[in-house]
Length: 177
Image 1 (cartoon, rainbow, N blue to C red):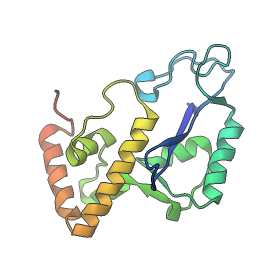
Image 2 (cartoon, one colour):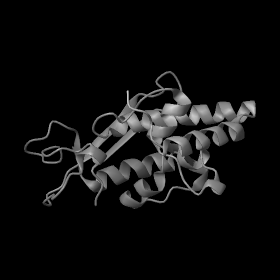
Image 3 (cartoon, helix red, strand yellow):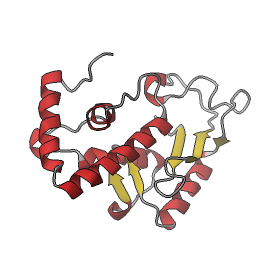
Image 4 (tube, rainbow, N blue to C red):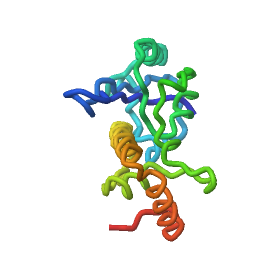
């Protein structure tokens, strides 16, 4: 397991949702399994001889994240802890907006997946093909906006209860089209 791609979108302003960092991490190590359906990484993506992607080394990717951290940027995403562990960076909790935590009922002892939440809260289907970190980042941003809306209107608790109930009936899967 290693970091293969970092995607960062603008979180607000006129360019909200626009990707401004989409870096693939170059590696010289042999890769046994790209786990493409989960990673979105395909053979050749990380090879400087064959890739048509923006390739950077791990140190450059880390420095970009470090710069964003020190600029005070707030990181919005879904289940970000693993991502930060992989790049080996500690983000202060005040700079994290994790939708997996916002849409979690502790009494249920189960965190909801991004795909499931987007389907039930935004009425959209995502992650229908290979994993795409830009799509995931945009989905997490939409969920964060939805969280703020539900929180302001006082509907968050009722909505969470409804979503968990629907999840129990569907085994937390979205229906096929």
